[in-house]
Length: 394
Image (cartoon, rainbow, N blue to C red; front, side):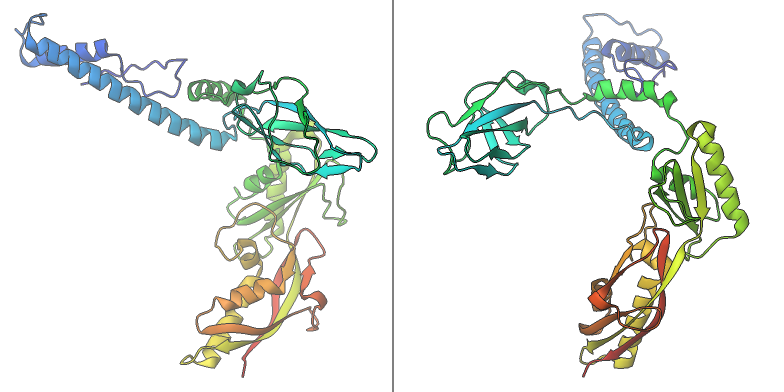
């Protein structure tokens, strides 16, 4: 029945193109009735006319509520896709001067709650009164963003501190300023659509490079390392980056796939950025483990120990390490520190294990790793499982 308007309202670009004005809805209803009853007359004295007006009013409100809900949901989705969230506003801020009761010197860490009237603030810098002085200053910021705190003034109030003076201990140096209100939904929707054409497919952030690399059908795991030259294992190289790529098992891809990814990334960045991009497979560090577990009564010790070995093998496998055992292969660089506590935590989750009695992390020579952890030597590195031996504790 509704007539959909194909034009989009520039003030509400994400609204559904359906009428919400009660007069328009009433006209729709009148038209629909006349299609069924051609001789029906729309006169003010008719009870049906007043019923139609009431229905149109309620329908308009319902449609508007639906419009707002859909527009908000679409804006949230588009904001996430375009990495363009609404402006959250800024907190009003200022500075305070604190007077001490003595000149011995005092420091109060940032995070102290301060009240000015009904405005709650927090110190964002330490209050430092140096020895030989009796006053110190600190920056304060409103807890909530918004312009409502701008201009607030008065005597700041705090919980008592034993070292501050009892007479005018704290003074607000100037009225609060700089607070701005969060972006209202309607303004955000308009800005989001206006800025959408400026969104580029050029990778900019490290995760952009990793996401684009994973667009290749053969690439399953990818992460980017800013400033790293994989060819020389050198960090902090200007205008340089490395993208590590692997298959779903965390294993190297073919040379051709790596070249295809490199060509795509190079073409996507363009000559303007002048980046030196490297696309490489992971490097691997073999790590093993030996340990003992206490097996619960009624469980087969050999089966439980084998299950622990299998689980630790998965944890130390390249894909298992990247997945963090949670099955979600993201684009962030995996943790480079392998700690024996991670193996203990994983072994403890195996059914039939009452507790882990001992656990030792081993290097690629089978020797115990002192300290219980190892940092992979390269940022493009992943662990791979060596010999893992688990026995039942007596």
